[in-house]
Image (tube, rainbow, N blue to C red; front, side, top):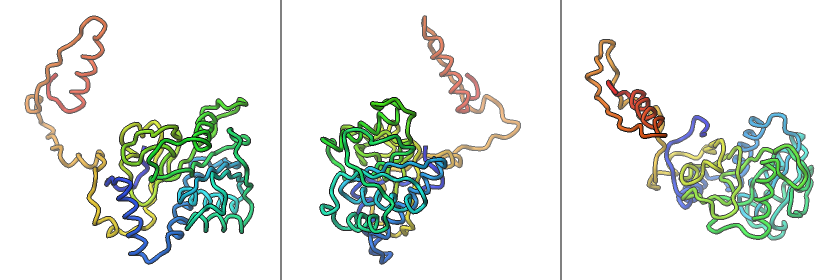
Length: 290
């Protein structure tokens, strides 16, 4: 389910990266500034959907998705949350904005760094998935795959030690999900909420995305419309308001003979419900006589 308001245009992952880069040029800002804005939006989503959450576990990957996680961890610690963080890569291996985010998080303090031992280190209220974003093109393996499996077990309340399920917030896209097709590439996070940024990715709405995305929250990060003008829209979301204007208003004196007739054939032994559902659907769609 997509929170409102949000755009209807869908783009592939490469286009979203191009929009992101164009926005940096148009706005004259640094990529790290957009990263901080994105993480702040995701942190608001966390507090809105889990207002009682205190203990957070943030899982960070080696790229900019992990950078979003470092910033969110810093913001959460500053707000008084108990934050534990597991990173796939050591700080010295990080580059660019992700390294800046990691350094600023350590400089502020308040985030407990933890090693990964193939299961969640302790019970948490919310796990933040900041492992991999839209650039992923292969199945997760090794430690990353084990992290994803542990997150999904914890969400289902099926960890090694029985415990209440935890909430899962994914940053930009659930790790393991293809941003273009919506198909899992291998082990894939099942999120309760996904905070996505800049533009809507096609893979958040296609394939098996609905099994993994949960509630989708969009943050445009104040990216100007001009940043997307060079990108051809891949698809558009169909909403009720999109088609409402195409349906003519019916006069109070309208007659059933003016709105088409439907004949539903069916009702074989054991399948009577199918024809009934078909008939009801036709009536709800506006057929005059069924």
